[in-house]
Each structure stands twice: as C-alpha cells, then as structure tokens.
Amino acid sequence: MTALTAQGMTVSFGGVHAVVDVDLEVAEGRLVGLIGPNGAGKTTFIDAITGFVRSRGRVDLGGEDLSRLAPHERARRGLARTWQAIELFDDLTVGENVAVASSDQSQEALELVGLDPAVAGKMPSQLSQGERKLAGVARALAAKPRVVCLDEPAAGLDSTESELLGKRLRTVVGGGTGMLLVDHDMSLVLSVCDHIVVLEFGKVIARGSPDDVRRDRRVVEAYLGSTGAERVAEQL
Image (cartoon, rainbow, N blue to C red; front, side, top):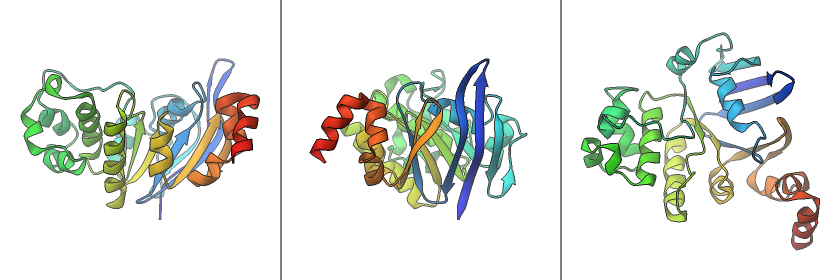
C-alpha cells in the first residue's frame, strides 16, 4: 500500500529551478532512495514535501492531502524527517532528545535503531558520530511516523558504521515504516534500497531497482561525465 505520494513537485528560487515536476512514491515497508550529484535538488525535494520551502505540487500521506499544511502539522500526520546536520540538543540527554518527539516511545525508538538502552542517560557529547546519527534517526521514529525522510544519515560515518546503519534501516522498514533515503554513500543506497529515483538539475533522469540504476548510462554520466560513462559501460 502506498504511504506517501508526491506529484508534480516543483521548487523555484527566483529564476533557479531547483526541483522540476518530480513524482515519487513510498510504499509502506519500502525503502526508496533519492540520489543525484551535488546540487541535484535532493534536500530541496525533502524540504518541499515536509513543508519547509514553498513549492507547487501535491503531497498525499495515506490518502490525505498535506500540501497546504505547515511542517509541524505534516509531522503530526506521520511525515517525519532528519537533517543533514545532527540536530541534537547538547544540554539534554540522548533519551530526552528522543523524547522531544514522543515521551512514551523514546526507549523503543532507541532499541529499534540498535542503540543500547544505557545510551538514553548519556549526553550527546559522549556518543560516537555513528551513535549520534542513530540517535537522530531514533528521534524521527519516536512518534511512529508512516514515512520518514532521511537526509544524508551516513555522512561522516566510516564503512562499518554505514553498514550498521543500513541494517538498522532495513529493520525499521521491515516493521512497516516507509522510508525515503537521501545519501551520497552509493554502497549504502544500492545495498539497502528497494527502489531508487535519480535527480539531475532538479529533474528525474532515471528510476528503478538498484541494479537498473547502477547500469543506467544517464546515471553514470551524471556522476562521472561522458568519458567516465564510456569507461564504465565497457566494464559492464
């Protein structure tokens, strides 16, 4: 069942078209990746569907039109997000940070992302970079959203931490939560996503399974240029 439907999403800043007529769906219990080169419009798309920038288009969550709602109202309906920066309150414990979203579900959310219950009593400064990222994801999950948008959760993580994050994300979607993942870690995206949408200059240039996207010449060219695409094509 489709949880999130975004249709015709368009964002312009003056004469700059950051997102152009983008359609995207996230089903319950499915993990959709949104990738593209720097400046492709990925974060702007998340900002648009969660209500943080003015946009044109329609956003439905569980059949309810959220397009005219403020960000906090969309969150209350079940559309959650994280941010590129790890926005933890350094003067609150980890448990209190998560409880900002839901005081009743903070412990459950921490366990869901694989953090030891003892972490709840620590201060953010006592956590590793990977644990801080997971705590941010836990806060987004605490209110049990239908869909959560993750904006570069693997940024700054080493390969081991990124692999662990991927396993935890699969656990979450396995429980029925829909997820939209934006990240530059292609190993992570290609290994955990069910479906991938690729943006370049704000427009969709490809969509499909990880294998389909990996072999799409337009995608390879967007990342590596035409010369790089020719070299990759010769290896496939």
